[in-house]
Image 1 (cartoon, helix red, strand yellow):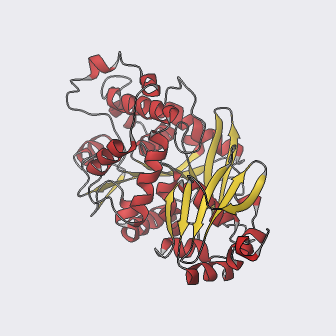
Image 2: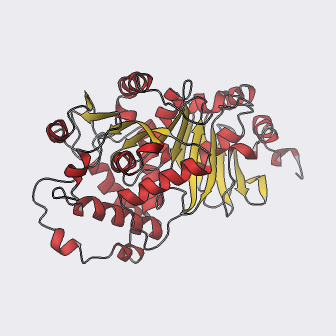
Length: 396
C-alpha cells in the first residue's frame, strides 16, 4: 500500500492473515465483498487467483456491515464472526454464500467440525455445500427458490451433535444449473445421493423443506439404503384437488425463463407478498438468496422447471404420489405450520391415511419454521433424530 490511509484496518488484516481456503472454495470468477465499519470501507476480492484487499469502488456482490467494536471482537475471537451474525450485530446483504464463506474461512478455527462452504464434484456437476459438526451425517435439502442458506439456523443448532451437510440442489444457489435438466424429485434425489458418494458417506438422515421435503421423500422411496430418518418440513406434495392449468402447462417449456425480463424491484415485491412477515435478520438474507438465483437466467429456468414438476405431479394411480408414499418404510416425521399458506395443514389428514406410522407435529409458524420458530423446530428435530440413530454406516 502506498500510505497508511490505504492500509486495511488492523482487524481486517488479522482476518485475512488467517484465511483458510479449505473452508471456502473460491468462486470461479472474481467477486467483491464489501466490508464496512463505522470508520472505513474495503473490498475483499475473492476468486481463483486468491484473496486481496482494494479500496471500495463500484458495485459489489455482497456486504458485511458492523461497527468498529464488533469487528475488533470478531478479529479477536475465532468464532466471533458467525456469532455476531447470528446475534444481529453483523449485517449481511447480497450473496450470502460469499459473505458467510468469508466468515468461515477467517474464523481461525481448526476444529474438525468448523463451518465450511465448499464445492463437491458429482456426475451432475458441482454442488455447493455448507458443512459443520461431527457425528452422524444429516443432509439438508432446501425449498423451491431457496438455497442452503435457509438452513443456517438449523446447521447452527444441530452441529454440536451431528455432521450437518446443507446443499444447493442443482439449479439453485451456487450449484451447477444445466439447461434442460428435469429438476423433479427423482433428479434431486439422485443429486443428493451423488453428494453422499462424493463425501464417502453410505447413509445419512435427511431433513427436507418444502420442495426439498419432496426430494427427501423420493430418497426414502427410491434409495432407502442411503437414508436414515426423514424429517419433512412442510413438504410439497401432489395436489388432490383439481389442477385446471395442467393441460396448458404441459406444453410450456421452462427454458422460456432464459428469455424473460426479471427486474429486481418487481420480483422482490412478489416474493414479499408470498412470504408474510418476511423482514429482518435471517428472512431478509433468505430473500436476497432467492433473488440472486432467480435473477440469473439459468436459475430462473430451473425454478420454473421445478415448480412445473410440483404442479403436474400425478397424485393417484399405480405410479401416483400417494400410492407410492404408502410403501415407504423409513422413519418419517412431518412438520406442519399453523400459518403456512403455501403447504396447508390439510395434507396432514392425507398423510395419516396413507402413512399412519409416520410422526406428525404442528408448529406455530408460517412456511419457514427454521427462521420463524427455530427453538421449537430444532427441539423437535433433535428429539426425532435421537430416537432413530443410523445403523451400519461408515465413519463420518
